[in-house]
Length: 205
Image 1: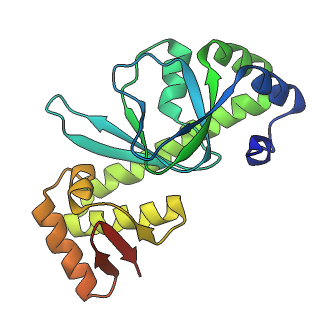
Image 2: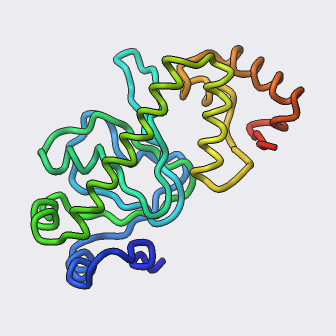
């Protein structure tokens, strides 16, 4: 994939330094890209596919934060890279995903010398912050059925696909709920003709 088409705002000099130093890598569906507690060696720009970003608690529970798609980057990895800190999130490829890995050593130089990169980083922070505010609002002010509907709509928006290949247990993990509750709510949504359920697959109607 010609990654430059995804980032037309990058100036020529920035493109040249990224091409010289970055590495393109493909992750298989389900492969862990970044683990909690891991030192960040590079910042990933998503070229194709989708990445799920979530937090883990000490008991192994998961909390879905957001998804990343083509043309996006992980704000958390950028922060950790700039401050030489370990990751506070886990990132997993939802499907086969191609990324462009930019070495952490370049971050200060890119931020200081290239206006388009600086603006890209700031916009990435803003987009992720806005999305997290929406997530917090849904947790604080909405019932589980509303949260589930938001979850499905967000998945469709980020992936561009109305078919969601996942299990009821995975959705329950993402929403910090139980499989029984999610299955019951999905069945009610199917009765309302909002979704069509198949084994490990949900079609949003």
